[in-house]
Image 1 (cartoon, rainbow, N blue to C red):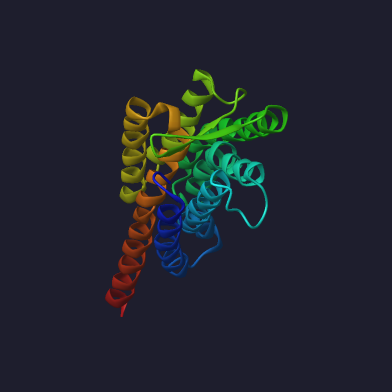
Image 2: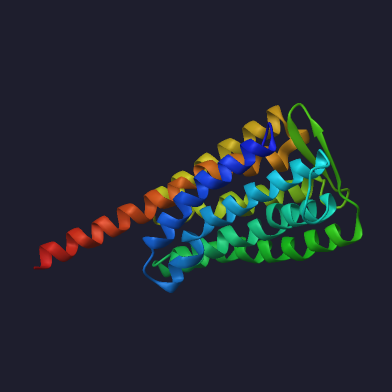
Length: 220
């Protein structure tokens, strides 16, 4: 997250609490991946806290390069696959589900490419204007950025659930703002923003369980 290690660790703790509550409200194996997204983001924010410590020479475990690699692996490789896959798993409408499959396929290709790039190019990690900057020559291209935006946001728009569509809208707005204001620190700032708005996933499951409970009461 922007600003400091303490800000990242605080964000991680707050999002983790939401993540645990979200997983607790999921009651079907197909829901578990989507419900766990806030927990993934919490770990990711903790991960960047460790990157901050590495940048200041305060790491006790691992190296700056190790933590930076793990951070980039999730942000640029796994997230483009995680979002469409998790939405596809919980979509009950088969027609909508088929529309999500192309995003899933592109996400899988991005995983392979970004993993290759991270393994074959050095990632430079530094600080600029209170934000962590991750620069990898293999992933820093307009094509990769465009596909990333399409995959991480696009699948959400085809969901039949309002809260998930809202998440897609806010993700797209956040991506656009970050690209305009802090493009040089896109990976760091965007992931911090996504971690915060992942609380909408809790809202999705909260409404789902309330609707199911209300339906059960009406049946009795």
